[in-house]
Image 1 (cartoon, helix red, strand yellow):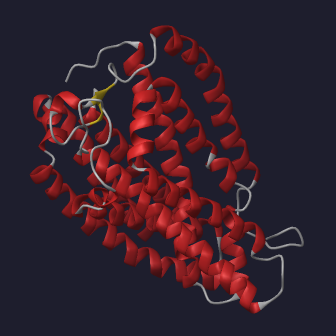
Image 2: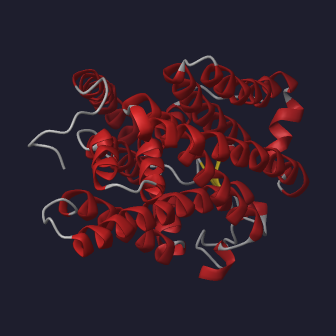
Length: 342
């Protein structure tokens, strides 16, 4: 596999880093949301909300930044993806909006029906968002119908193909596992025990889904496997992913739940890196004529634009990373409810 060390390749990986950061950080937020209705008491649900309360909006900065970087670096991909997946992106947007509103409104009124409505909104919107993110990744991996003008030539229902839906389910299970581990780290007593039981269930669901999707990837998306066959050393990435998945459970059994949570984040990183290397230099693969695929070269902005943006990114990305580290450090430890809590 030949990686050309140029601005186009640099931006391919920068956009990938931003989207991977979002998947790791907002992944456990969405996982907490998907697990929210598994709890029974009002106090437990408040603790779940407050475990992500100080950080969830900061985590979504990575999505906004990634989307902005994609628009500026590869505008053709941005235009094709957002026009072709318009309905899916609108559903994702509404899910993220209702999730945010539920977090803010849920505890504003001491009324059982009011809180049930927002609890349901929080869980449903989190599940839908995770499924849509996974389905979008599945379509990127599988390829989509593009015409000679690089425009989406399919329908909304083409997006909902079995392979992409399976990826969506796998991502949902991964985020639920990631969220359960985060919850175990942040909670105590009965709620922690409940999340431990949930983790052990969703862990095996994710592990089984990962094995199944790996087999399907070899069978139905040979274009993703080809770069690895050309450079067999790259197969260390899937092997590392398997070892990390096993390590999650090993660390959990040893009572090292923070280490298990970090391993879960590392799994997301290796999965995204594997997808990126499988796609390179493509960004959107045409499922029909390969000549219609959008690559880092035919979909990119001018070299001058990429150069100016790289300077800005080298200043901005460390600031975002620094902010993220500081926030996690400030709000480390177990969740304690007080008068300022959600």
